[in-house]
Image (cartoon, rainbow, N blue to C red):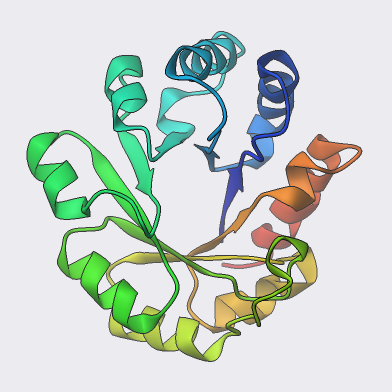
Length: 201
């Protein structure tokens, strides 16, 4: 199982960059999802983590195609309300692009339009979406079975104890935000998820 750490748009560049550099050994990819930061601030964050030894191959830029192109980052992640994945890939053919989806129908459409991976959620209860019921594992399993040639990642309320269930449902990996970046010791949280993922062959 792969681990994606999604930034929480709460910390200044230096603090966030330091967390990412320290957590890097335990994380397969980072989605830089900093909605409140300017393009220039995002560029500074990217340079900070690159200088700290994080590979550019581990970085995925959320929504900001301009930042990805300017920083020479190859992977972008498109929100459900974002740009059409087929349009993005036709205009920027060197980019790999994933999409956030919230249903099997959205997953079908995103993959048909060329998405290289899918983030499906929210799977479990999460404080950030208290007003919405979790989507559970059944639809995730159906999506993974139907699209077994596309990596499907689960997001939303995931704890290390859920890894075996998610693997059984066909998820290629998990995406985690608050449980890492809001943790008192983010690197320890990342290590806990990493260790749980290692039990999956």
